[in-house]
Length: 452
Image (cartoon, rainbow, N blue to C red; front, side):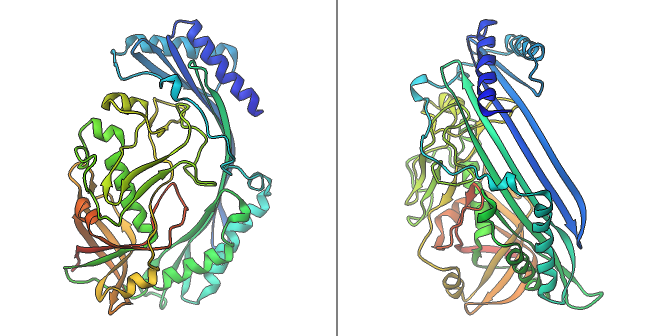
């Protein structure tokens, strides 16, 4: 379906809803082409290609609202969608915070954000499979101790997103991404303990992907370095989170600063606006304007133009992340963080949320630790953003006298998010935008590592 058709359909549906009795309405429409394949030991275990399209309608009758979605674009189905959504809205309770954004806030970022590259869709099915195959072959060829594989994967998606509202906004943008990943299994000798790890590359274009054999070799190296993993006794030590695991800390900061957590009073940061909540070396930004970023977009899912929000500046909490509903509940202004699929009302989602990089290389950070833990994998979800309590299973490598000494597994890291944010002692220079929430390597002063 051509992009202009999707915009017109969305706009027409908004007009139908208001003509049928809605005081205001908005529509999100999506079309996408997905591909995914999974191989294990060279054999294809999954191969999927799918095209999909759909639209989600939200209507308001005063301060009553409801939403519904459909993948059927026929006139009769769209009429039924309008009637059904209005009927549901009449049954809902009045909610003064429920509304479209102020029309004066609407707009879009007009420069090219480099969200779409045609080489993703142009790649043949055979070549897509070859990416996954080469990654696994490279991992297995890296070392004879790579004796098995959990598999390798190639995935891609190309799609268009449209937003239209009765406030006069209609716009669309295209996006693409592709990824290759492999998870090899290492074993020192047949019958001995096995260890697995993974590596991956993800990009907006095929040309920007890390070569498949490089992904495979790095995954093998990560699995091999986990052979001979030990447990350690419980102790308080400095903990270094590699860039992959450190990104989860930024995810917890998002969970504690998103507007719905604030108005529900379910965040340990809810009364901290304007206060010091982290070390003075910590700045957290939510940048929707980064070219090629996985959270970049010209406008959010309520038609608010992309922008950069300073969440934490030199340790001081500057802003919460808000969509229009959360902003109305808190008496604040939206930060353009509305995120919406086809079903339901907009939620609060990050743009490109990250900790600003520091000046230290990961090697320098490791060298700074006499006795501590280098975390490369986190397990489970033992984090409570209401209280800030933090406890997660982990694996990685022990640091002795500034060097990675031996692999460690089956330990738990415990502390509090507030203390962790206040004691980020070193920040790496290795920030990469491999996802919408990311971080460089971080050294946290002291955490409880609970082992045997």
